[in-house]
Structure formats: structure tokens, C-alpha cells
Length: 68
Image (cartoon, rainbow, N blue to C red; front, side, top):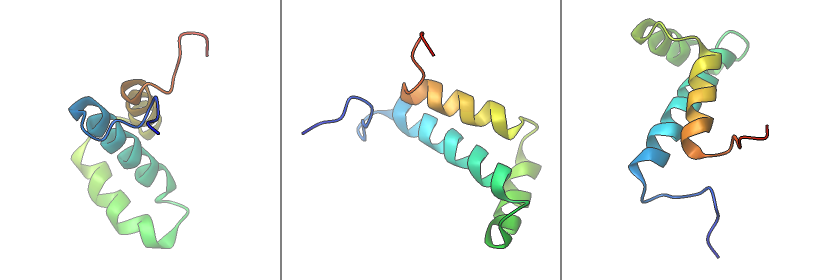
């Protein structure tokens, strides 16, 4: 069974997944003690807000349809 959204052989899928996970780590870094150091490192590497990274990642993965 293959999923419509899970495409492990797609470079675009992995790019979206990486952006989504990076945004989630930065967003949760202030609340979760274990993620504080990785969140600081990742947030110092970019000026993009976490919400934009998450949205970009979901858009590349294809979870955001045109209707919502």
C-alpha cells in the first residue's frame, strides 16, 4: 500500500519534511528542554520564522490542498 503523501524517493518530499521538522523543532524549542539546544542552533542558521518553515514544508509535502 502506498500513501498519496509519503514519497520517500522524492527529493521534494525530503526537502519539505526537513523544513517542516526544522520549523517544529524551533517552535517547540522554547517549551521542551531537550529541544532547546538544537532549536537555538537551527534558529541561528536562518531568519525564517518557524511558522513559515512549517507551512513551506507542508506545501512541498502536499498536505495543504487548494481548498484548505
